[in-house]
Length: 510
RNA sequence: GGGACUGUAGCUCAGUUGGUUAGAGCAUCGGACUUUUAAUCCGUUGGUCCUGGGUUCGAGUCCCAGCAGUCCCA
Picture 1: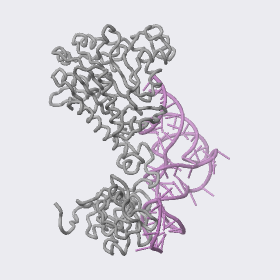
Picture 2: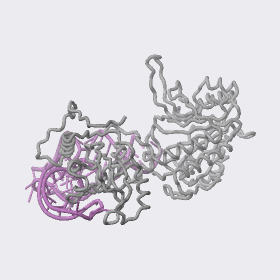
Picture 3: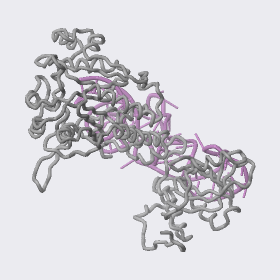
Picture 4: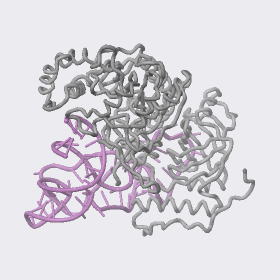
């Protein structure tokens, strides 16, 4: 509700313990804040609420700029506009002040003249600092040096900033500070906001592709009795009222498959999963997964879906068809390359993928532990160590060794091969898909099989009896797909670290 | 878990072989300026040199331990 009249100062509010500094420390952090608090007090004395209020009719700066492009540079009768945003730069030339004002859409120059705005507003101009949020009414035109400018007639003070912004030229550089104070990074970091806008557009595109194909978005439980569907150590927690240990989910898979049993034939979930493991440029303990399941499909169905998702997401993010990423040249033109797991292993590692002895010998030469470990575990380690980094991609690696794929259907007549693909780009795993295993007896057997040499945390062999019971009721043959959304965003925005695409990545207390 | 590198003013950074009272730019504060563009000019202020030990006549600098971060490896 707009307000009509008088501003209402709040005299009862006392600022929380303004630092008691004597005037001798004018440049210290505390003194910088005091200088701003003095201006805040002065605003209150002028009857202005330094925390502002609703301000209607604001035009996005990008739209104002578009208008500005159409007007005559010499004209003195440009349209009147209302803009609002944060003061990023402030230059004073005597009785004339130039401001670079920034909103979510862009930047524009404001000119405030002492004569032009009058003595009342000029007192407010004296209280402006870098970082304050203001609203401006004025005439759109061009300054003498040809810069598009809003010549202010009115100034609405909207919010005081009590903290000194980062260096106005370099911005925030320290990667630790950039993440801990993401709000500042978003304001001052080159391309930072754009990257998170892209992330939002990518997620929109993913949902759009799936919705077009008749998928339903659902939400499974994040608190679970046991963490299944992937090989990872879960976070543990406890429900007090039920006095019951719980874990945070590490994957979406097993509940989505229950929904296939339930007749929801095309479902997906886009949600957070949690893995209690190391932190690296490609790993954050919580990250966002897409999993999608389609009844009556298989892993080739999922390859088509994966291509569609990535191509549409790339368009949404404005990613070029061909670009450099982490030292790899990638080309998003579909269809993506496809190669068999064993063929890649033979070509890159130079061993015979059908011969465990040959694999073990090659693995040992790479420093991989082989004693007492299942041949497929050794093979998998060798693939990770030797092949992954060579895959510029995007490339679908297909047909995995069955023993390391306990949730995947075996190839007809080839029980040692699992109908699985992983999509690699720039040496990084981006997606993982199966023809889903729907034989309850085989599934139960595989849950019971702990592979030799594999620590429990790295195993998917965790019995989930309710899931087995669901399979016994009949899960239609299906294809399933998982895509790491954070990595997809990294890839499509060419960000070198997962921490660049997560707004608030994990960090230790300071 | 192992290794390399980093930590100095609110921010971005210098700091020599261990040697006086630790510097610069931006920001702040004061002054000049009605057309600036990281405005400019003059002046001003600002420090737990990450923390704790140690060596030394003397430590931002060397040694040890810890904390935090970045990267690499497992």
